[in-house]
Length: 148
Image (cartoon, rainbow, N blue to C red; front, top):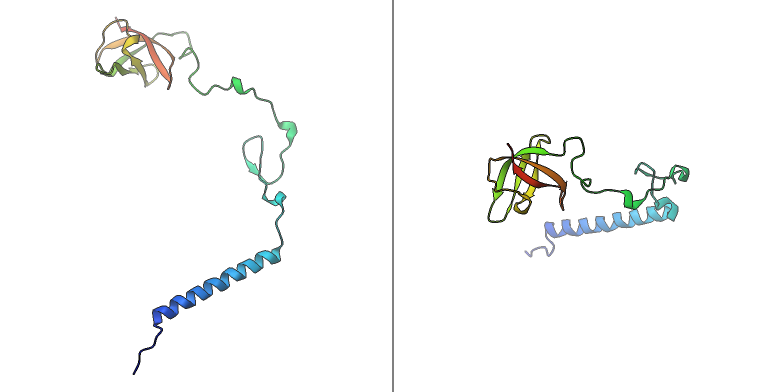
């Protein structure tokens, strides 16, 4: 008695491929029957609030914005207010690299500092007074001195 040349697994694979081809052809014919979509059906609009909508928004609500007036970083001058001098405690300081961070009491945050901005020598744990300015990545402490 001879063996069948086609095993059950091979038949299953062939049937799945045939079914897949038929489904693909069926979807293709359904798309053709629905008709072609126009370019207007594919456009999405963005309204004045940044929400995506299907119809064109009212252009009368559009306002002109000067690109140069947009500030992306910390405002020049650092912290605004009456008290420009802040106090804090040196949280960490790497004297080999020459920089560290000060935990600021008024901001509940930390501020970067560089050894070149210190008026006197400081170490970890010292209470310091300083002013702030805009740095490359945020606030930067300047005119750092030990608190009295």
